[in-house]
Image (tube, rainbow, N blue to C red; front, side, top):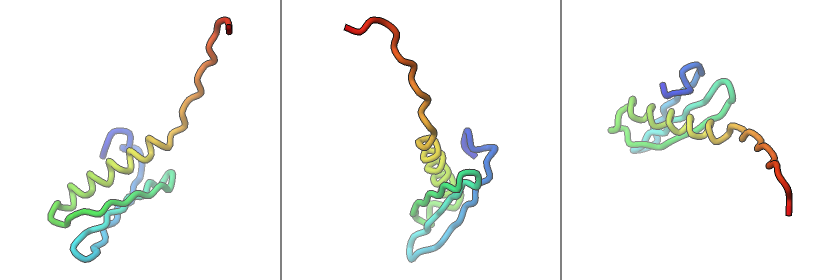
Length: 76
C-alpha cells in the first residue's frame, strides 16, 4: 500500500462495465469512497495502484488545515 495508508483497512471492488472495469476503493475508517474506470488490459495490480493513489489524494485533501498563528507587530 501507499505511504500513510498502511494502517488502514481499504475495501477494493472491481466491476466489469462493457469494455471497461470500474474500480472502487472504500476507506473503512472514514467511509470515503473513490472510483476510477480503466482498461482491463492494464491488469488488476495497476488498476488497484491507481485507485489507491486516488484514495490517498482525496483523504489528504480532506485533512483539516491547522490554524495559522496571528501575526504579531504593529498595525499601521
